[in-house]
Image (cartoon, rainbow over all chains, first blue to last red; front, top):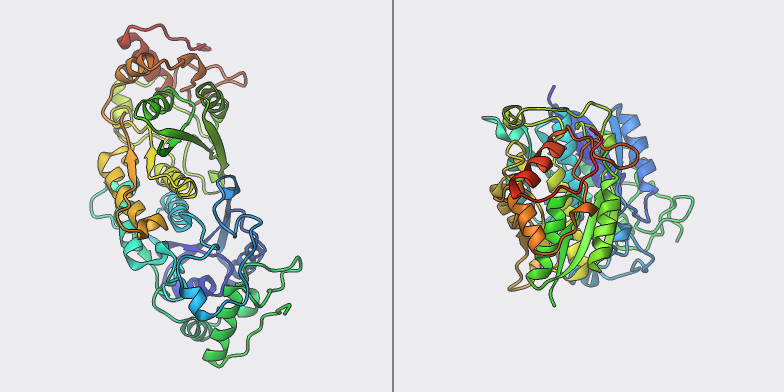
Length: 227
Length: 227
């Protein structure tokens, strides 16, 4: 069985991604990055999801707070109760500079040590239309880079692939797909600003998209929201 | 004055690089990454070099030991007393998987928070002929990626540049260039396997290349070697 690195944040997108990697016949190795995100309680969700799936899970610690630049890694306020128009207007303060470049770089290093040629990444270009590093052309450029960056890439016939199966799905599509593959969404957390007990705020962009997604998918939302 | 991020390891290459960034008229912001390297005493050299140059210095911690794969981040032995032929035969165990992709990703994030369009990287393709991520085409691919990856890249007319002025220099060239620009090489450390006091082993590939470089440049080598 071919190995694949699956970037697992602990949210519902990457939980579905992990199930898809298995369905496609890969042996997944889950990788989470503790990058100083204030919603790092999601890392506990990632561990629970990996354990439930019976896959190896590694956490790499990266302290990005030293270089700042995002509401997700600082004490700046996470925006709440924004309208769809507000969410789609430009790049939000929750964008983390160069985050996906860094996450994929670490995944590439892990893939190399595993002898894996496949990386699964749960990027979504609909929810994150404002994020430059969620665009399909970004992933094409990363693939080109990856195929020059590693030991394996210097060998004939080697191809590293970045899989982004969720990239054009709506949140409702992702929830339906996850349900079909047996994902337990009660183990996932989407909130950017959970309380100390890990309960979702219910009002940040991520909570609003999640609520709407379950409603559109016609599925019960297992999330414990504070408000 | 335009800002530039300068990746500063504490070795003689990046010390020269920092001086060149200043000479080219940039305001340098030095960035080091503590990636669990066993020769992390080099980070103290980086701090001393930045202080001597009067530039801001940030250290980002990234624990790569969890994903393994290199003699530089594990307890595997660092090779000693290799001949030039041995050094040039394939990719050595001191190669760190995807290291330069990860370092440049972090530098890109820092550049974005600073509003900088320029990143200086001290890669060298002669000493590291066996490292896939020291090849000029790797840096071209990273530049293409960077110009899709950031907020700034979504704005008209923006160009991010990766500067690798040392890429085709010999070690002797780098030492001569550094001397011309007033670099104090006694503040630098090249060794992959220094002792607890920070003294260079004298026998790893990096020590051998350094010794040879000072000899070829006809300059006194200020390094305290153990053996």
